[in-house]
Length: 223
Image (cartoon, rainbow, N blue to C red; front, side, top):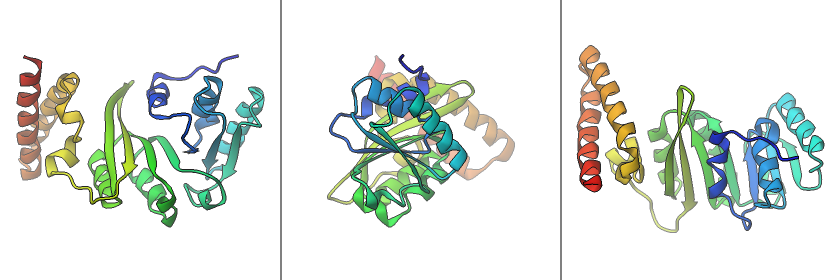
């Protein structure tokens, strides 16, 4: 029996490959992990959660789908225990950027070479953190899920310093050059314009200028 997976979680699958040694942090009933094994993407995967009840739900699903020899649950805050297992790739999905940054702010991040992240807010803070840790963004994607907007980020450790402009940090170095995102940025511009009319914030005015530049360039790419 194949597990049912949401479009939001399914959007992460393409970033995970058979050679990756993966830990999924915040297991969310282990749905993604079961799917990755069932589809043959991975043979084994670790799932971690700080909440015993959440981990118990994950274990129950793992047993239901008879994957106890493929998926290994670990009670752990974030990546604090990856020094005990063979992991080079971390998946964190469906969280805010602050939580993701807190999880990755560990000395054990030095053991990680690939990050598959899905955040629903403060994406600029997450990009800034990744750059500070020399993780370069190799893919970005906007995912709409009900009323929430997520950004998928695939990042890998780089041997040279990573830096982005303020505009790239705010709106995504790869998102701002993809014409498929034009409608998203047009909606975002209208939102920031409403905020500016109410606040007259200089920071908001700066973001509006960035968005106008992004939209103009994306339209040129479509023409």
